[in-house]
Length: 365
Image (cartoon, rainbow, N blue to C red):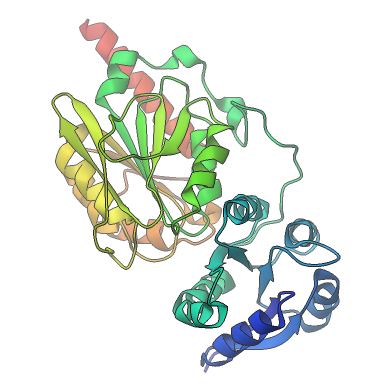
């Protein structure tokens, strides 16, 4: 048997420490090797025990989880799964934690903590397993990006780079899971204000996509928002599937419209990349671009091949820049990729291709 995943639990609640330890120790492939009630105790424990993964609460005494995470990822990067609270504040802090380098998060319930965490046991241990094999990188040292800036924004084209008429015809579809919040940001901050519309499914629970969209909207030249059922999908906008729903696109005359509903999980996910990409294959066809980013599993891979068969052009993130290469690997295995690129090169390649289409349209006119 391979070595067990060694986990340290960091939480100021004795109940949560006990529950998480029990959940972890029930698994044949992992063990809780220690618990800490605050980050200063955790720091010494990490030095001594060298865990594979830590679970980290956000709000703790002496040093909050975000400050500790920031220091940890600068000095000793390692896989971290955040234990968040399902509140507006908790969602905002969780987005910051993912930006700092946390691999993923679990939203603990506000009431019925013991039963609630046990209900989440499968999700918790799945995320720990993913974190244990994730590619974790040292946190970058950078100031908050201004509106219209951000990682990779230096190569963003001027607003006149694309043609409005072309933008109304094309649709860019993005799917992502573990590590996807930062990967999506890396793509979106490079897109010009007159970009074709972008539709996005990121695996995320209810209550967190509002903060995710707001954070991106403050960084990008395009407008970023949660998708609303029945709204027209417009150029210069990106629409994120609300957590806990299914999101796909439909046509109303010459327009694309968003469909957000309470459909069942697909590939265990809600929202599911498969649902969005299948609709793009059926509705958008050769006017679609597909982008598959970092994530565990195979959600969306088969549907991305359907998009390609319907005429779309597809980009897949390469292994070297993925936090988890599962979903991109599966997309490649399905023959869905036209290009496999490092994360930072996907948006420039897409923009170059759109410019080429614009030039061809100019010549026809």
